[in-house]
View 1: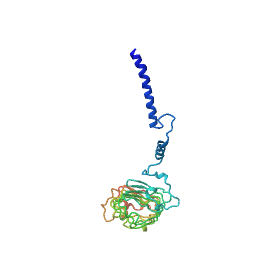
View 2: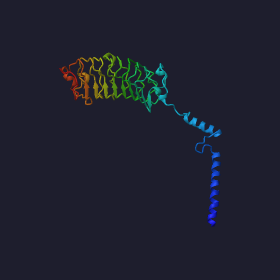
View 3: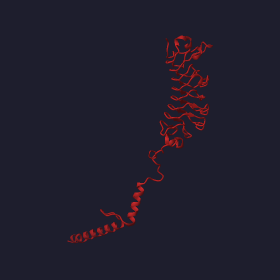
View 4: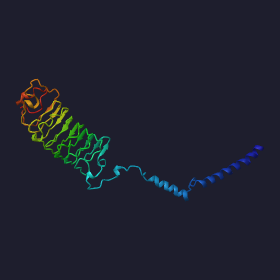
Length: 286
């Protein structure tokens, strides 16, 4: 009987206390009940927080794709890494819009530059004067017709240089440590290539001079393995072209690919010119 009376009195009292506590909590925390909207100070505070959350943070970098390049501006007036893709030590400037007509200013630590298929017309002495870390430059497919003689003179680390598919009629002084040089598809004539242009390049492995207007074979360093001279105007070769007339024991074991096809020269007329080589040049023999 006592338990029954205790239950009848205690349970209603607990339920009333819980309801009163809920009402007090709802007054302290507006919006805690379903369907109720916050008001007053709390309403304004929450709205301002939502507004700030919707806006980008002040120190967040803007998406570069959302920053259009103004039409008609000269690319040289714009930051290089806005026009190009800049990764650690590498700069990619390929088919840049608006047209890129000169070598862009490069970050100091640039080691690899790919500026292919643009409209660069000239390379001056100042373009690479301060970028002494360059190891590879690829300027394939531009409109380059002039290069200052000292344009590459300070690039002591440069190993690979491509000037293919341009409008060159002569070559500048080239870095001595090049391992690969590509000048295919230009307008080079023999008079535009200095006699000793490649002589001191003791590390040169690949030399590509195809599809030009050369009348003779330039001096080829002993280190060269691949030589492309196809589709030029070469009319003859002699024993000193690849071998040495004063040294019958001289051999060129490294030279394993020589292309001379597409030239007027008939190679079978010069059988003594290839005795030092382990392979015969590809070309006309009759």
